[in-house]
Length: 606
Ligand code: GLC
Ligand code: CA
Figure 1 (tube, rainbow, N blue to C red):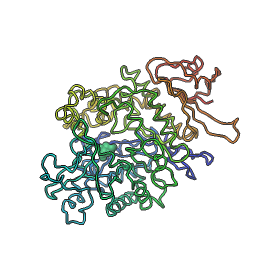
Figure 2: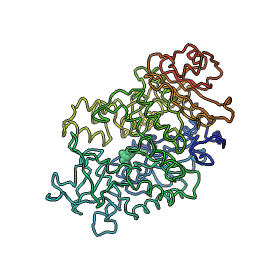
Figure 3: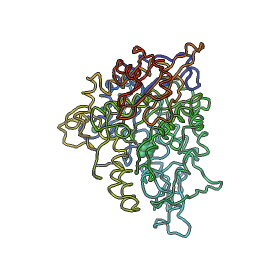
Figure 4: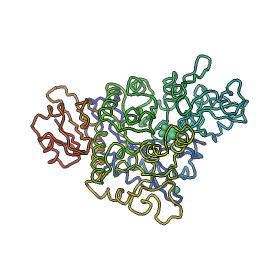
């Protein structure tokens, strides 16, 4: 089941407003976190050769595009999101020849390859930054340099230009003794923000992007791209904000959706993508809600990006202290945020659909039920069906198709992610806003490392991620549940989560209603059942074709809510079950009785 079976959407089916419909409108993307996917040389770190060796698995799953998290040369402070050379592969991952081979093999199997583009910042080890440390160098203005606060000795505590805090802990300003000034870093101090106001910076980025596109890649996933334009005051002022309990103010208002964002994205489009075909661009839409800005940026008439990752639906279980103090998710909040995202791009623009990525905990642990393996499988399928039946381009994060779970770490020394480690120290040891116990619980629920444990290929000691007899341990612990949850077992099992994902992908490829039909939320107030309608208008309203999607998002049975029940009105035909998490006869019986079993999900053709 490879992308070759994906149908071309008929002209009458409208997608993002472009004509003809873009190829990615009924495609599915698979994200690979290279470090954790497949190790081939026994150093305990995944590599490019490993990815190439597993491409047949991805072709079998049926995905159309793979997105690689960064594999460029990097000191790996933030696992490659800190790039020291955009035109080299980090030796840890392999060579440029390995990259070319990966590309050629993927293309031969009918899959496209999208690279991560991290250009809000570079590594502090990038030659641009090193040059910028000299105030007389032509690169002096390529980053955000500012002097110490007036009246303070540079480099001493409290002399930072203002109180902005970094997302990864500490001040967002780092003093550089050579230059005698501070540089801005929203993320780690090894990730200085580039100054996009400087046209030389922008053109250097576009040159690099063209270099990769010419090499044959099929587009970019753009890291925090909505943070590149900064909200400067008329004289270059940077306004401080209110200081929070951890001792810092928020930097986000300065960076999110800045005044020149559209201009920069349009310029990038002109310089890199105009005249090219068959590519895909997706931006990490930090700070963009499902609303008019999402529509504007992804409307093809504006020539910016094909789609954005909007995060509003993944913030709903963050508590008062943010992501580290999680609270239970309310289904009505999920419906509300998803509806806003879906409706924002209903007539122009396009959505990406995702529940997992390398920065998020595993959705089956987060919103599903992992108390027994049976419930894990059921809830993984239900959540997959729920996500994949929305309108937009679905993204699968490695291992999601197996129902992989959170890491289950209980000690700080098991964590590798700098955000998790730094924030633990900041919140527990320094600011003392949380107890060690609570923070460990917060990490267990929300740490990015939950998504980063090695891919579970089989039941051997290192899960097939690396050979069982290698001398080096994997860079992060393998989840002990790999003896039960692994690709080898699931590929062979027609009832597995993997097999269910294959069906979802096939449906996306072949059913225009799934790909592009209108989306309408039903029963917005029901706290356990998530149901909606997908339909393609026909010239003759009698022929209007619709799919009813109903998912029980709980471990107890649930009544089919009012709006959905009205549409079924008692007459149920098992042959109209398009897909269900149980078998079609059981699903038909549930519809007839008006009652869903735990985590039952049904797609029914009206
Ligand atoms: C994005 C990436 C994340 C990274 C950050 C800084 O949010 O997805 O992994 O740490 O940007 O580059
Ligand atoms: Ca390796």
